[in-house]
Length: 371
Image 1 (tube, rainbow, N blue to C red):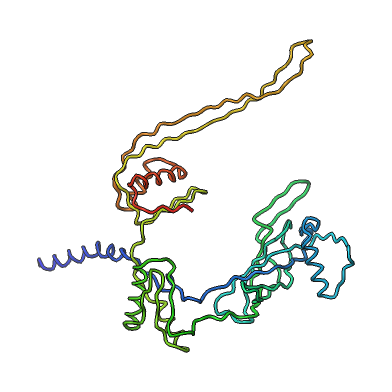
Image 2 (cartoon, one colour):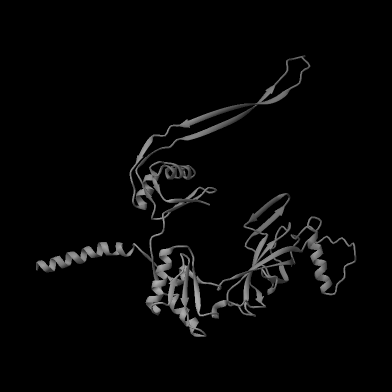
């Protein structure tokens, strides 16, 4: 009976501490943390014209390249515009068309394209993109885009008043481009493949190599550095099956380095779970400057032949609220760090300066990155 009680107690204790031990290392699939070198998307860009706008196109006097582009397009269609003709167009807009050519894309496949106004068009709503070649970084044409735009905004103007919802000078054409040329990939070249990790970490590179060797045999994978893993792969059609097997392998990742990301423009502060706080004392107070201006009119006396003079009187007040010295205990968990920082009562903008000062004082165990 006593043995049964001890076994029950051990099982109950394991239910408490075992999940905590399992959560020490997070597990990800290989496809989520690494990619095969050379298997990537390519950016495409093109210049084109959007027609059929309801009087919201470019003002050709301020955007002469729109009229020049239209003339060039009409000449290709056999229409000659007399020299010196002043075309006042309102239904045409010059645009830039961008798209992303995914890996292994073949001729005939469709791509989504984004269309953005180049000049002063008021809206692209209801427009149609004329056939636009999309080129890669090498100057070659890889796709051809054409179609009706979908603009997520709406607007109206009358009598000097204007109402607008969302953005009107950019739109999207789902499946608006057709691939005309494929991009060769080095997937079938050589006896080895190279896996590039999303972030540089020696422990992650070693974990990836261990996971592949455990599944495919010792010596299959080798960590070259903190971001690269070289893998021996079979040739031919077996290489695709090989990649399909290893990309779903679970990889145990160690805890990341302690890091705090500060966005100075928005005041956002993000801390990861590895951030710890040493014992310190912080005093925080706020300083405010108030400037108030009051109009003052100087009226001359009767029969003085003076002039009325208008002026301004400014009052400047500086106030500083005292901040008490707050002792902050050491925090080894993220919840403790958040609780200690909240006790300061500081705004997110003030917290940016406080965290940097704590890092300089040696009380904050984390790398600070300002974006």
